[in-house]
Length: 285
Image (cartoon, rainbow, N blue to C red; front, side, top):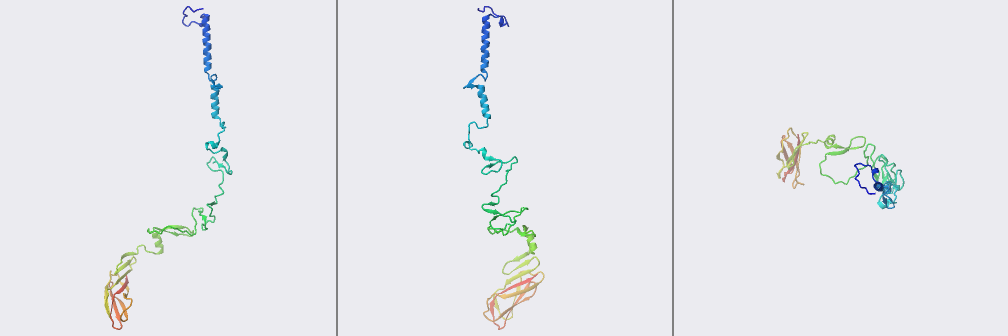
């Protein structure tokens, strides 16, 4: 039967004509079916449902039992069976929780490159690896070096400074002091043909050569020293600058006239004459 009147607002569907109720029931049925069809468990996916597929994917991702059978070699990884926690031949040893290898290193610990590690405490055995003692010192026999000779002034010397046999650096000034070497011995000098050397203890050595002149019996030459001895001239010696005398037999005498003048006297027993210079050295303070 056709619906001929406009239903009132909020009028109960139950009050509508029967064919309208039938339509309403049909719509309700299809709406519920559509809602149910949208549920994951009801949507078809392949031979199953979306819900089943999602559940399967999650389970597949969580599966750590290598469901596809991929090998370590295929991905360039180490086979887990080759990693061990205790020392095993031809296996990879895993560090423990403290980051330490749970095993003792043996085999090549005593030798390296075919050379034994020294075990005597003194490294004086040929073809052995040097080992320090408990104090960290290297106890050696001979120490050789192929380093080139240096021309750099020395600042330290390495010397044995005790009964323990250890070699330690020692300052150059300390070494000289212990050897009795005056580090400031040179207090003045003149390295010329007529020169001098002054020492820190006051000693002075002077030297020189007289011009070459003709000498005969009892001829004299007075030499003015390069510097005056502050206190006195103590001794002097002289000789001619000839290898041999052409004439006669000669003697040369030194006479200390003062702190600044040295007299040289020549003597010849046959009254011969010769031309020569005289080398002299004088010592004083």
